[in-house]
Length: 342
Image (cartoon, rainbow, N blue to C red):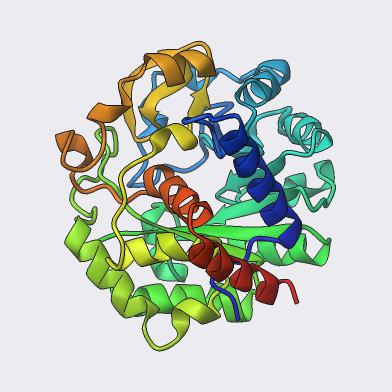
């Protein structure tokens, strides 16, 4: 039974990396880079602001060398490739191949509409996983992506990828239209029926560009929702790809400050500050992002835009760092990792 389904090899690499940063007395460093090599997408999801860029921007594709170079410049051990829909990038397989060759852990975030067609371009590797976006069971998911048939295609793609030996993870965003029951249903399905390797969960955050502003969660709503969904042993049973402390945070047992610098976003415009949910401008280098951003002014209680945010990009790294700084929490996370790798 596991609270944290990260593979042992990956856990060790991340722990080693964090220890190195501590030895170097680095205060700010990236844990995972969110790489957006394009903004174009083949869906128009209600909660997404990325596809609202002008047509000229939507046609752009980041060159392979630029994408790989940004990750290497940051030094992060993990990369989450998003967009837009990354499988629409004609050289996405080459970006993945080069990052994997450098032993970066790569998660390719996809709505899975193109996944079955593109599977031949990729090679299974312990360093690579598809991260399929699933926001609910059939009716609920198709409604959130504003298109019928997407859930069934995503399920078929995940089954085929698993059959071919790929690691398959999922990413689910939950809105205030969700109930503990809808969360339990979809996570039970992914965990028990589809047997995905890991699941990520996130409360929806109302960032400015999202067309649907009504259905995002406030902090108290989020805590209540996850507390109920996690009850009855669910939290321990599901293969959730989160540190135990982040799950504590989601259900209100712990609180943290935001460390958005640890999950920086790099897109066609450069490094986005302070995070992918808020846009206060771009800089060309990771060093500039770290050194020229006033990090102290962001987070709940500091910037009104952050008031309802409990997003993974701001708070998971804080939880990871808190875990590393505590022997008790490190052992709790390690127990979950070891049991999930049996």
